[in-house]
Length: 91
Image (cartoon, rainbow, N blue to C red; front, side, top):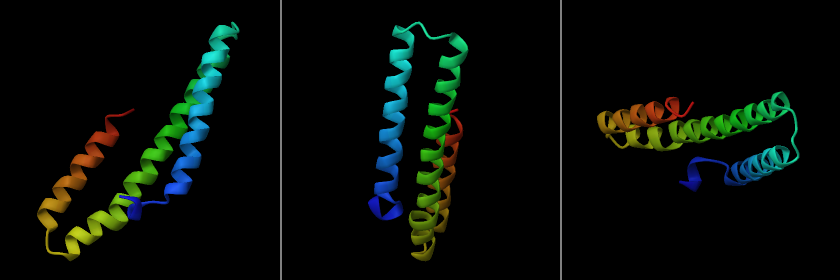
């Protein structure tokens, strides 16, 4: 799987998201206005969505391409369609 994506980039993004979620948790304890918390929740959600996009793109560029080149087009396309379906159900 690591060959499909830039793992360092993903780790960096995920650590940032973890920090955002921890900040949201602190905001709740600090009685920050709801609108501000919602703004931060949306930012974390968008960042996580971007991680999913990066993973899906890497899957397409490497795993799907390799599967098709190896003559497994039908199964590869079916698996990719399932991955896209799972990703689209996240949000």
